[in-house]
Amino acid sequence: MYDVIVVGAGPSGLNAALILGRALRKVLLVDSGEPRNARAHAMNGFLSRDGIDPAEFRRIAREDLAKYESVTVRDVAVSSISAGEAGASVELADGTTEQAHSVLLTVGRRDRLPEVDGVAELWGQGVYGCPYCHGFEVRGQKLAVLGAETSAAHLAVQLTRYSQDVVLFTNGTPDFDEEAAAALKVCEVEVRTEPVEQVTGADGRLTGVRVAGETVARDAMFLKTPLDAHGELAEALGCELMDDGSVRIDEHGHTSVDRIYAAGEAARLPNWPSPWIHAVTSAALGAMVALSIDHDLIVADVRAKFGM
Image (tube, rainbow, N blue to C red; front, side, top):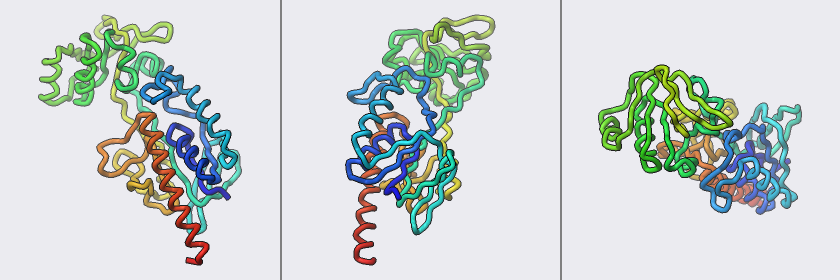
C-alpha cells in the first residue's frame, strides 16, 4: 500500500512526488503521457530551466526522482478512483489496481482551440496562449491576436509592450467593452473584423493571417483559449467543482472528499480569480500540497499508534 498516489506527472505532480520522496513516503506517480505543452519548443519562466524543451524538463525531473527508492513512476492512465475510511483505491488502464492512504490529483488542463484553419497545426509553434511564456521571444516582431472578447483586446494591449506592430483579428463583430475599445485606440492596435479565412505558416512557423482574400504578414499569434479542466476523475469521486471546472480546494489542497487532494492547473481556491497555469506556479503548488499531505499522514500515524 502506498502512502500517496499522485495522478499526473506535469510540474505539479513531479514536484509533489519529489517532496514526498524526500520525506520517505512511499509514492506512486502515474501519468497518461499527454502533457498540455507537448507541442511547445520551450518552457520559459522556470528558474534554472528557462527556455528548456518541455520533454527534456520532464526527463530531468524523472531522473531526479529516480534516486528516491520510495518513489515509483508508471506511464499509465487512471481509469477510476474510489475513496473511503480505509483509504483510496486507484484502478489503472492496464487492469491493475493500487491502494493508498491518499491521492493527489494534478491532472492539468487542455486548451480548447478555435476552429480556424491553421491554428491547431501551428499551436505552440507560432500560435501561443501566454505572453509571459512566449512574448519575450517574439519581441519586436509582427504580432497578431485572435479573438472578439474583451480579454482578447486586453491581450492585444498587453502585447504592445513587446511590439509596436500588433493587429487584433476579431473574426467577426467584436464584443469588447468601451474601455477596451478605447485602450486599443490609444495603444494604436489595428483591429480587423473580417472573418479569418486561414492562419498560414511554413517550416513550423507562422507567416500570416488571411482575411478578405488578403494575407496580412505576421510572425506570431496569441489568443485566449478556454481551458477545460481534466476534472472527470474528481467529478466521479464527488469532489466539489468550481464553475470553470476547477477542483475546489482549501489552502492545504484538500478537496471536498476525504483523502483526495488536488494541485496545479486544474485546482484552485474559491478566492482565486482564475487558475495558476504557469509551469513554475504549478510546481510550487505541488510542493505546497505535498507538505500538507505529509503533515496529515504524520497526524494519522500518531493517532493510529495511540488508538485514536
